[in-house]
Image (cartoon, rainbow, N blue to C red; front, side, top):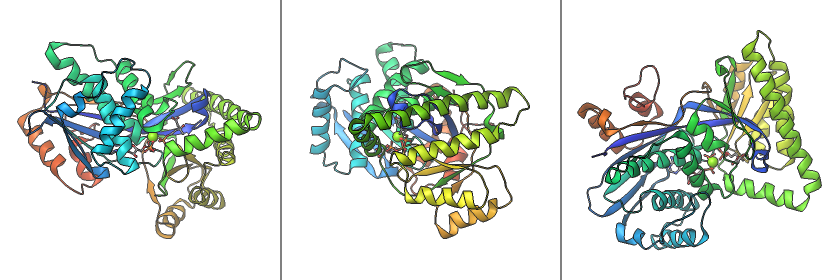
Length: 407
Ligand SMILES: Nc1ncnc2c1ncn2[C@@H]1O[C@H](COP(=O)(O)OP(=O)(O)O)[C@@H](O)[C@H]1O
Ligand SMILES: C[C@@](O)(CCOP(=O)(O)O)CC(=O)O
Ligand SMILES: [Mg+2]
């Protein structure tokens, strides 16, 4: 018996190269251990049903297995097959799931279910996250990773078919999940959420795990709370690129060159005593200006940038798809840092998040490692409502004082 078990995956910050990454340009991202998504996979109380329980977005639905069995079997696990997608979208519509946030999450869930465990039922998937959703911190990738990891685990336990679950395999299906949510993702978010740490990535190029210590990089995240959808922003850049490729391509190429130079500086800083903050600061400022030229900045983002410039804190750049969501500020001078935070929090009602970059990627606690005490605590936690970040962290956060024996 493999149930219950827990999977987990981190959010991320794209330091350089969002949007251009979609066009096969280089980008650099790092995981954020403290902003994680957790999935509790357990037995359902009703036979022959599959329950999706996503309280963060108030999406709850139970399907009969025979309803999902009507969807034709999948064959291509690298791209979305239109006839499967149409069948799934029809079931979603018949289930009265109409909010776009809900449609994206249910589509990702059902697509991965059909690919990985189409014969299984009597399972409940309950997901909670400590990351802001739709804020540029890769929550869509994190849910894709935890679902992919959990369903691969279930698949490998089914009929004693013990497949070796590698991170590459988890990432492959998480990428498919991202395709359900974003349309045309670059693949950087699922990769960094699966592997953790810091990564230099190019869609059709090589991937380099960056062995750098990010603890000395002083970054402040600001969550503007302006909602936006990555899918819409990526589509906006595509329209712009299609309509004026001679102008947009050089902008994306500049971002590529910035990412390459940033990688060189980050590696140099960690291998020597050199302080390359000044160089990185210039690259952050130029990258933000280029993103603004693509129309993916937002008044809220520009306000954070202007304030950090005026107070002499350091450069600010959007992270993720932009259009609201989150920014990060490289802290070069702390003199007016408390004023900066105070204005952001009190005058603008933005949330500032102090966090370290890096940390583990996807993790699992299989049934065999869960004691009755673990299960009792997890059950109480996952059945709770309006949970605070610290209540979730206390039981689930991986790290030096972790309660669960994460693998
Ligand atoms: N905790 C969660 N519960 C349910 N769905 C989620 C959760 N986190 C993310 N999602 C899904 O991912 C979508 C947000 O993805 P996206 O627009 O790419 O923003 P980001 O990845 O920057 O958070 C949501 O609309 C929802 O469908
Ligand atoms: C805009 C993009 O570069 C990053 C999107 O990140 P997020 O979903 O906003 O966290 C798209 C992608 O790389 O798939
Ligand atoms: Mg996303």
